[in-house]
Length: 327
Image (cartoon, rainbow, N blue to C red):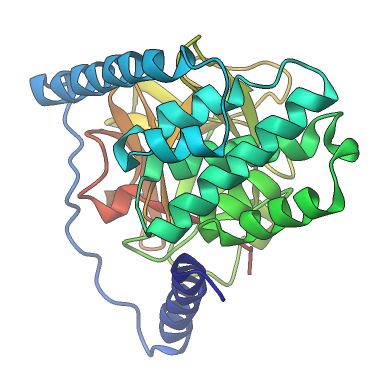
């Protein structure tokens, strides 16, 4: 029996492909729509959104305490404590079972897979948990104890990875991927068009048939977890040049908060680490109350700016990105 969410994954891929095919065969491109996100300076609303996120983190911290005090986890304990709202904290507590030896690793993997199967069976939704568990699955695959797992656990882990939203599969488990904007259904790419001698533009391009070698991205994942919850910082690197995407807070050509590519692949600029969250099958990249968005303004008739916009991106499809196989 294939889980409902597996059907959703297939449908998501088919829907994206169908819309892209429609764009390719269209006689002319539609006129750009007005952006729902704005390019305002830091506002009270942006600061309030940041404070709300910090308050949410505090709440998760408090929930985590209840689970971290459990001394002997097993499947029955998970059943008794299962609550879809508590899943990020519960999964974090299970991750702490692993203490470096083969026995604790096997137990941790078994219980994380049990929790994920329960989550699937219940038909619950929790984007934060889904994002975090994708990272836990990645850690399991990379751990030195992975080779000691039974073939059954390995098979089940690989099966559950295949149930993840497609964007998480490409983001965590593939060597490179392309980022497709949800609103414009166009790819973001690192250009060789200079802003100045240290940085280049990053654009969303009108045509998906050119600039192919500049579109693939790769990630560096840094685990900055606290002692109560999982936290990740993500570096986006252009796959070929290894230049990083960062938020430029200076004003260039009347544009502030541009997302740009840093020239040097050896020296990292400020504001290059991103928080990433999952919204359905889309990724939202943020830092300091701003999210990466395809701008409503254009550099020319073919190229659209990419900027850091105040907000959380949840109601702005121009700030949501599909990670997918590059065409």
